[in-house]
Amino acid sequence: MKGTLTPGGTLRPARLSVPDVFRVGSVGLRARRARVVLSALGIAIGIATMVAVVGLSESSRADLMARLDRLGTNLLTAEAGKDGQGRDVKLPRNAVAMVERIGPVRHATASGDVDARIRRSDVVPEERTAGVTTQAVRTDLLAALGGEVAQGRWFDRAGERLPVTVLGAVAADRLGITRTGETIMMNDTRVVVVGVLRPIELVPNLDRVAMVGFPTAQRYFGFDGHPTTVFERSTDASVEDVRAILARTISPGDEGAVKVSRPSDALAAKAATDKGLTTLMLGLGAVALLVGGVGVANTMVVSVLERRQEIGLRRSLGATRGAIRLQFLTESLLLSALGGAAGAALGAAATYGFARVQHWTPVVPPWALAGGLAATLLIGVVAGLYPAVRASRLHPTVALNAT
Image 1 (cartoon, rainbow, N blue to C red):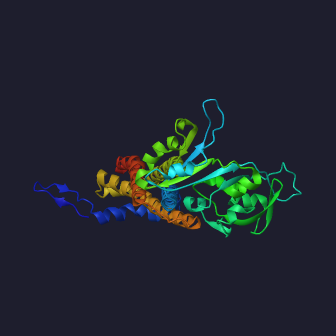
Image 2 (image 1 turned 180 degrees about the vertical axis):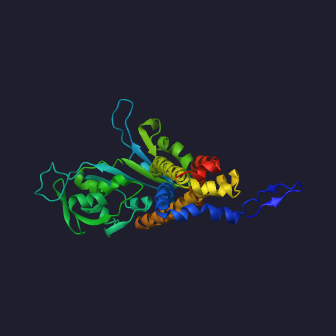
Image 3 (image 1 turned 60 degrees about the horizontal axis):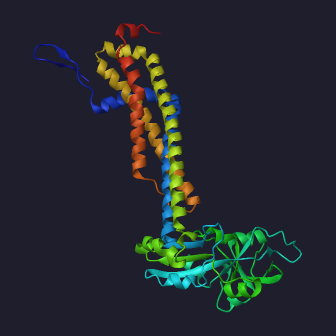
């Protein structure tokens, strides 16, 4: 770098070129590598945390939305509630037929609570029910809910009239059923397990239930035929319209006794809960990033104190205060950028690895990487500004005499 003469004969200092700026700014980093690594580590941890939190949140949400698309958001349930006097209300026996008359409805089915105690065998006391309840179901229930059989089979027209049962996933585990063909006791009736279901995400309460056909429940367990819950699927565009009239269709004149819900809303609420947790974790990542910024500032202040003679020498050779400020500010930016790049890579790798373990599709939003790198540059400017100004204000004579 050479100065130039002005027309008046005054020597004007030359400006540093961009390569010179980076070359001079990296001198301090190359000379103190251990300190640089430790300082950059704080920045890296903060950025890695923020990128990983955003990435895992987006991967989880994408998986949840994919499941919602697969399960469908057009399922509505109508359950029997209580009347104005607090008494239990019974849905009409023909509730399914009434719902099927609604134009946009594509499929309607039902289940009903059955008063039958479940035991693993007849030697188990009646009060030990293993937390499993009994419900009567229609043969089309599984198709309406999008459920799947893990073992055995679902009810057919013959099976719904026989003393056989299909267990939910949790019910089978609680009863210790490992294969179909085993028997359990419902009251005093021995019932054969013909199937075990996979978990039903939209209606998880069915996972803890032993199911029998409507005719079987009426014949063996005194079931009165009144459904407890009606399940309905309509066209996607008409869900809200059907929801508005479903209760009064099932129970004209007493629609307040029927509770209508949309199971997919629970999964959507879970996504909202995950978003709140993501905000909290981002806050923790920001704290880690702030701590890393303090470390960078500390490193730069110490660097200025240790390199006063170097600063004095450069000032004596003609380096301007602006050149000194630019040198140390560049050094701070490079240090922060180093930590930011490493943190972004670590965060992306952590997201990819954890998502694969959870069988999610890894999603790392580009804005998260760009935002993380931008945050590191901001931290670098803020952390390096004071040390850079302090270095530029050192008088050459004082700096050269420093020990």
